[in-house]
Length: 166
Image (tube, rainbow, N blue to C red; front, side, top):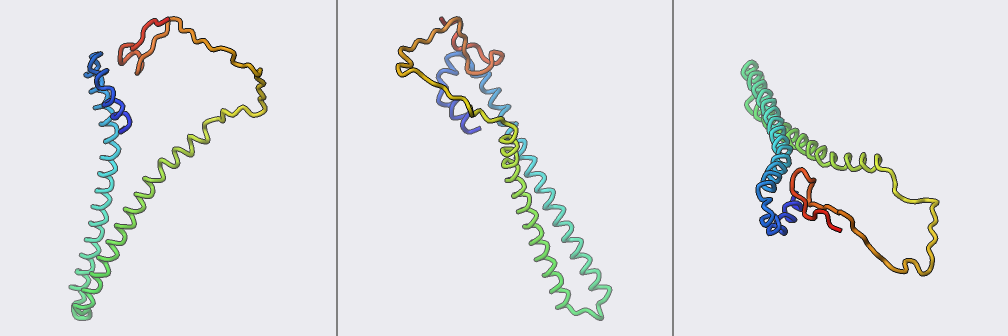
């Protein structure tokens, strides 16, 4: 995303001179929305997970207090305090464990996608193909263009930069 924006900033004069500003702004807005959507969903899910774990900790703490009230003659205040302290430490540790696990899973996603991509792409090596070239090859070089049309994007989004060049 940063690379695309840097390229567009470097070519801002061309964008303005050809009148592509509106199309570029629309395309950048769509790209930023797409990029931010995943980050926002990740933040929402992690917030929801933190809320659920905090509510679970509150339920356990309420249970400890209820047991302490029910058994007030057999349990001392120090024992209740120790139980609540252990519960808070366990809840914090569980929360950090889950946050670390989700961070690890998020980090492993791109690695898995790259591994899948690597496995699905066939090798372009030319094993067994031996090309012999003459010693004077190439003796001269020519490039000929006939009715070449070029553009920075697909022809649907932006007009051609070069049209019918020969």
